[in-house]
Length: 116
Image (cartoon, rainbow, N blue to C red):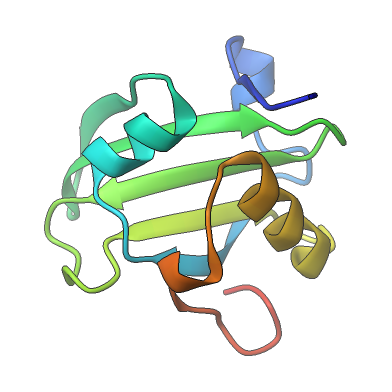
């Protein structure tokens, strides 16, 4: 089965279209994300938002996504699923769910129009 790979290089960590859109908020915590993905998350502190943990992934289609958890986000939906701006958000959402072992129950919110 083909799965995702971690974005490793500086070039891979950049968004193909210059930015991202949040395409879903997930109810998962970092430990559960790591368990499902089978890899550790990176961590840091973002000015104004505080501590975060996350991972950038390249999916089998070549699509870039990120899963980013913020410590100070509402606990009902602390993790963002991000896709490249201008991507097909529905396709990105579906592929991310399949490749990252996410279920519809893990989704707390999907923005109207697919991405914010």
